[in-house]
Image (cartoon, rainbow, N blue to C red; front, side):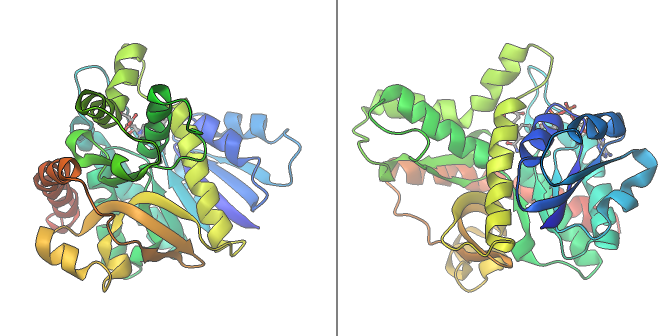
Length: 326
Ligand code: NAD
Ligand code: LMR
């Protein structure tokens, strides 16, 4: 059993995510860090009758919270309001994620780092660059959680074809986590004789599902509950593989492609991308294998071609935020 830290634990995602992780059998210590209200959330959760100890850590106690963590999940930062893009959050969230990464490098340099804070396409490179500066970067251990795109894909496909089981039908989603960079690979799921109109609709809904929630919440934030579900699913898979040694667990996730430098060399040479969301198999050390890109339909190839330039811009923005500041 291991220590897991949630940074941003008192927020819209942080609270339900902490609740779900309180139920994990692999966690002995759930440390909740936030700049507001962490002790209150921790006191509340600590009454739940599972084995893990819950502690709350405020603004001044980041180092204490992160000390010797096995896994750190980061939903800290501001969410979107209607009319904003995820990239608009960079100004505030980049600094938050940088500071947390510094804390990770100091206190738990070998931890698995699971990033939820947007814009994920840029915040993951920020984490990696900070860890590189501290000589503690292992590309197998840093993940952008894009699982909500996968969860939405299964659900939205089910809405068109309710003969599939939405829970067990997993759609690979490649690229990144924002708008056109989200590329669902729908050509590989069973029973997918969609018309072109259905495919357009489905793809657009998956790419812009986040906007649906932002609009419906009307200024009160973005997806929190579905994100907590997706975040708990991803964190549980990481713990199952790294703590319990379970093999064969696969999720789509946004990672540094050097996690499997040999396997991705041709793709990197062609696209010049260092980060990409793809199906990954987990092992004891995190990424054990980045699966080969599935064969794409012409439709999906066009989506991928549109994603690559945008991804490059997002990645460079995150990387240079750290490299050009030093
Ligand atoms: P929220 O405002 O409800 O919660 C964020 C929490 O972070 C707050 O409690 C705040 O106090 C805390 N925080 C701020 N600065 C901090 C710091 N320096 N250290 C620790 N905690 C800090 O927001 P939310 O709805 O929970 O969303 C959080 C982030 O997750 C946003 O950036 C949002 O865009 C992103 N998000 C990502 C996905 C995804 O699929 N990856 C999905 C939904 C939301
Ligand atoms: C989502 O996909 O719901 C999140 O990235 C939050 C957002 O800003 O849309």
